[in-house]
Image 1 (cartoon, helix red, strand yellow):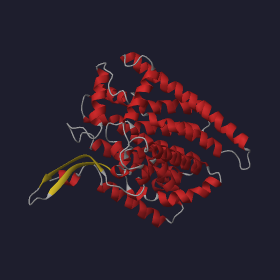
Image 2 (cartoon, helix red, strand yellow):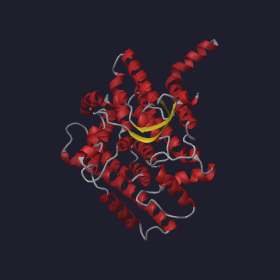
Image 3 (cartoon, one colour):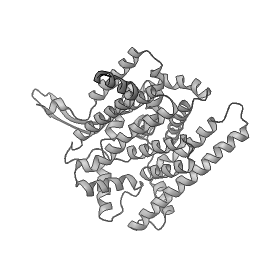
Image 4 (cartoon, one colour):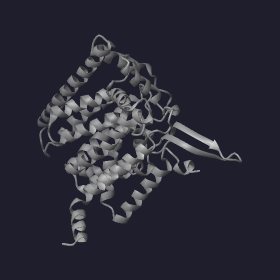
Amino acid sequence: MTARARLRAVAARYGYELSLALLLLVVLAAHLAISETPRDARVFDEAYYVPAARDLITGIATNVEHPPLAKGLIALSILAFGDRGIAWRLPSILFGTVAILLLYLLTRRLADKKTALLAAFLLSFESLWFVHASIAMLDVVAVTLGLAALLLLVRGEWVWTGAVVGLAMLAKETMAVLVVVAAAYAALQCPPGASARRTAREAGAVLFFVGVAAFVVFMAGLQIYDSGYDAFPTAFAHVARMVRHNRAIAAPAFSDAVHPWQWFSGFTPSGYYVTSTATGNDLKRTYVQYMGQPNLVVVLLIWLALPFSMPLVKARDPNAMLHVVLFLVSWAFFAAVAFARITYPYYMLALIPSLCVLVAVFLSRLPRAVILTCCVGVVLWFLAWFPVNLLAYAH
């Protein structure tokens, strides 16, 4: 066999895996290339979480309205690499990149390699995901742990699923919604014609095992933190403080905020961190542009992908069932929360992996030319909203 024939054989057998590896390297390189930009400034809520991580290092409990895990990872990164931009952002960068791998593995287990690679591609170039995976915040760490929990769920490992959900909650408490997702997925997996009693029993068993394991890990983690930092007498007191904090944040008028029912129709992006300079004749060139803007090429396709997936759910397709449930349950949760307190557009990060899978399922049934056209559009949008204007820096 010639060398060219060997290469073709390897490409035929491992083409999807090699493509995934290349995708991960490109995404990681893009993150690292901008990890020190801005060098001495904080992007968006880094203004809260970087100081909180520094306080963890000095033994002070701050920012207690949010769980400590993601901030603890930032603190460890600062200790390892110094108090600088790349250290603040490295946990999000690594978790955001690992999420692409986890989404591929999860989709490959429930669907096929083509759909899995397409879903991974869409997540890689989803603008809002990339921005939040480039800065020191909580959400990407939490959602990545949530994807790991879902991978355990589809393997039938309920207790381990709950344990990892508990870890995800220690990054951000809203990941508790995965307990409901697990129970709903179990109910849908019951065979057609199953009695309501059997369906309730199956869902109840998953709800119990996943819920109890998540509760134990979450409360134990909080208690370790509270005892170590003398923050609260008990983890229950800490949870009560978190609840009071969320109750104190009022819901603005519907016209004054981006509500969950606006997430998938386009909205004015939030400026997380924007710098520009005049280049003459009042012409401004943007150098750094971290924006809270999803990739609309991906997001708008959900209006076609979600109805397309409903017959697959009815046919008991496990991939469609899992991601339709995750998408709808998570969205319904935040839509309900919006009546009580403000919901920020970046909360949709919890839905974006499932959105990417559902869109990938839809696209994978279309002709190759259509798929390639959509992928080119996704990349062009991503480049247009990339956080750093490399062409401007070249001058």
